[in-house]
Image (cartoon, rainbow, N blue to C red):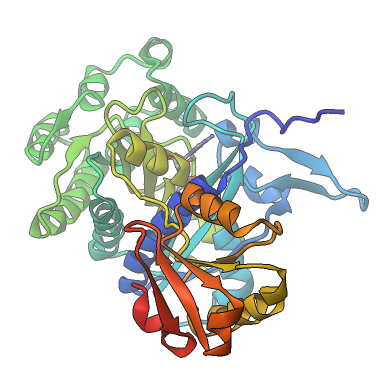
Amino acid sequence: MKIERPRGTRDFLPEDMWKRRFTENAIMEVLNSYNYEEILIPTFEHLELFEIKSGEEIKKHMYVFEDKGKRNLCLRPEATASVCRMFVENLRNRQLPIRLYYSCPMFRYDEPQKGRYREFWQIGVELIGSKSSESDAEVIALAIDILKKLGLKFKLEISHLGIIRGLLNDLGISKDNQSMIFSYIDKGDLENIKKIMKSDIFFKLIDIRRKRDALELAHSMLDGHENSINALKELQKILRLLDFSEIEYEVNLGIVRGLEYYTGMVFEISVPNLGAQNQICGGGRYDELIELLGGPKTPAVGFAFGFDRIIEAMEMQKIEILSKNPDLLIAPANDSVRDAAWKLTMKLRKNLVEKRIDIDLMNRKLEKILEYASRIGVKNVIIVGEKDLSKNKVALRNMKTGEQKLVEIDEIAKNID
Ligand code: HAM
């Protein structure tokens, strides 16, 4: 019986995992350099955790199930709510701010297509405890530094939800209608918004796509809308800090994000030409979520990369990560030296930990081992022969040049690069 993998999941082959692990390590280096610490959250959580403030979009796409104890659980669709729960349960007595990161799969019952999976990986950060503009700017700068280190070309768009919220509040739009409007903006469905309200200023605002001067333009439209102006000023401070680091961005007040917990600055990063699913990162400030989850009032800001999309973007932009070939293959010249070859292999694996060391496990004849070695691209083959062994030597063959020489067993390390 042939059983296929579930829709929206993928198998990762060795060459995929090489690239993914290499990229993940590179990302983690930058995360560590910013003093973020790794955490891991459970794969499943109580359903209520995501019902409180994650929004309809996420709720519609969750994998929900009842366990044998009749508890309502779900596979995590994202990590921010879990990290806030973790903070409330385990971290609330620590010194603030707390800088955390995670790298793990998420599960959403989305319609699978290129760049959109039902099981996908996120690498994300949450900076908990600071309300300062520096913390907003820090997480954005961190995301940008990571993408620059990977060599990716991308586009950063930033907004502040307070600008539009302030206006909608002044226009007397109810909270429920605001959530609806936000979800229509997120889907680019302006027609449905027009059924709820017809403010010209609103439509002009969400259409702004400019560099920093966007804020002056927005300011001129928002005369008298105190809260919106305050949000504009907050965004201005963040942009000023990004300017210090020469980070390029576009202000796009039409960015509202698909999750409902955001309260301030929001941003998205996309990769042009990646296709319909070109958003590789999304994040923002959520100052109320921790309190909603039973914790003390605690501001927080963060983002998550769609790791699969980063890998796809790197492939599209031809950023190559070559997989590493094995360094050594130990080949017994005949059956009488199999034990000696085995012992030598284990000794080399112990002493040369950074090398990839293979041994023939198929009982092949020497000639066939050499054929196999060139097929898998091994750099060097060590041929263990009875006569050489008695002199404590082995033959070392460089598979690229074909050159072969006798070397002392204790000097193998010196003779390979
Ligand atoms: P999100 O925008 O829902 O935000 O997801 C972040 C990233 O995950 C997206 O930009 C996208 O690259 C990737 N992603 C989302 N859905 C899929 C999918 N079905 N297949 C492949 N990739 C996908 C969050 O999840 C927030 N928790 C981010 C955050 C952290 N905000 C503050 N802190």
